[in-house]
Structures are given as structure tokens and as C-alpha cells.
Length: 171
Image (cartoon, rainbow, N blue to C red; front, side, top):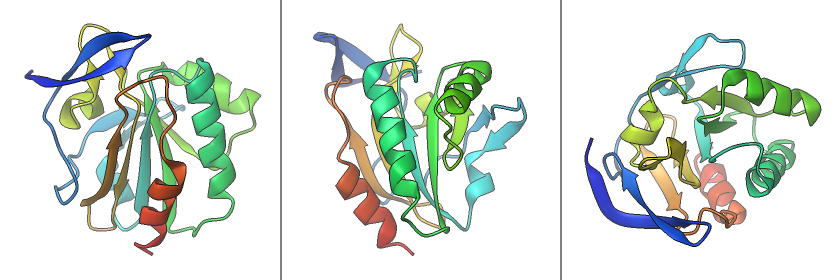
């Protein structure tokens, strides 16, 4: 798997990204992950919906927790044609435990733990860590990326307003 010159920082240390670089206008690569009920799920299963794909390193960290809760709050006020999907390499059991603990029902969770398929396809796998770089992609109904943000510092939050505005423009 190719490593990219672009790096992000984690706890102040540079980490190289693995996978292909993609951006706005590109076809959103399909990938297969695992739902919290252990069933397989593909990004292509969301075709026809606008997807806000929120990649986080681990739900059990403060920034990931805050980000996922914020997107859940925002999901209450958006069109049903927009799906918020949080993806991480956390095990499906951990994602389910976290969602149940925080009563998050309006966000879909996908575990990328098996193959890191999303991480590789979107170029957001943190080399040697098997975690995903904090990033947000907005994908239109036809499967094209219309917004992309890969945070240079994994400890920072994404631009929620920009991502949600991009999603709202697509419905």
C-alpha cells in the first residue's frame, strides 16, 4: 500500500498516511466494513443518500466522543436524505457499547477493523497504527465526493458547519 508524503500529527508526532489520496470530484471508493450487529456493510449501500462520512481514530477518546455526539445532535435537524456515518477501526462491539451508553441512534457506525478498507481507499490510515486519521467526506447521491477534510492534527475537531453545509446543498 502506498504511503503518502502528506502527514498528520498525533500527540505532536508526525504520522504518515497510507492509501490513495482522493479529493473533491473523485468517485467515492466503495469499501466493506462491519456494522455493530456484525453484518457487512458497503458504502455503496448508501447510494441515493447524501453521506457525511466521519472517520475517527477511536470513539473512546475525548475528541472522537465530542465529534460523534456533535454530528448526532446535528442529525436531528437535517434531511432524512442525509446519513451521518461514523467509521473507525474500533471493534463493532466497542462501537455498539459506546452508542448504547450515549444513546446515539441517528448515526450509523461502521467498523473498519478487518481490512482497513476505508482507510486504504480514502488514504486516511495512519501508518503503523491501524487507526484512521480524523477526516470528514461528504458524498453525494451518485457517489461523488463533494467535500473533503483531513485534519492535519488528529486532536482537532473538523469544521462541522462546512461539512453540514456541503451536505445540505446536495438535497
